[in-house]
Image 1 (cartoon, rainbow, N blue to C red):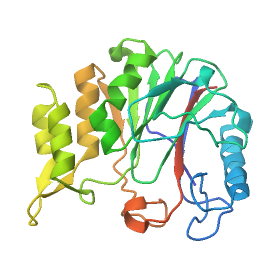
Image 2: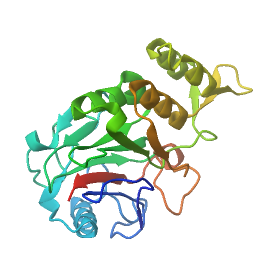
Image 3: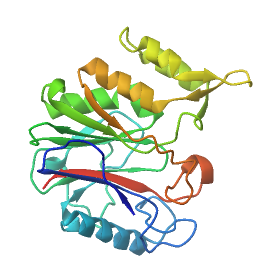
Image 4: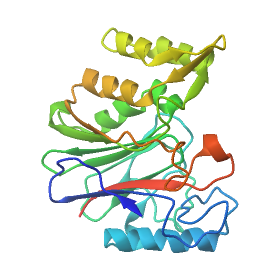
Length: 255
């Protein structure tokens, strides 16, 4: 039901990602839907969120969320209000940073890439929602900047997302990444787009781009899950595959 990041995080750091399994929601949100923006009854999402909190061994009030808008804004968990109902926040951002023991940063996904980060000392953690717009717009770099530690002292985990063999995009996506690329990432970004037979269509490798951006920023310890949300209907929600679907969550905190 849950995925534990395969990374050497400090013992004080607790992190996990949910799957679509183990909750109370009914089709098409079956069953561990954590998306308040969906048509799933809110009481189901509240119950699922309580199960997530129990798995983390914290009270649900310890979870901090933002209203994700596929942008590049980062918020600090300490400044986010307690949400009532749980998770129903109006604060817009796409990443959260925490330095406070007991507060957990959470982001929600259904094909976009979750990026969890921690300092090697375990005194600061972050969760970023890296869809293609946010990734091109600098969400990874902005999150690192808000962590305020040397990038060389950061460990990152790239979680399950839509895979390189499934994510078909057009020239608009490719052009936006090219416009935002730097000399350090240019070659990787070029190689991350594989032309398809249809003119103007490409397969896009989000993981390769995210890794290149982290490397360019100075992060060298990067651990990657290559599970594809679109390909695995049993374990993962996928907006690209199903259109109407639930949301998973990736969460990290200092326990």
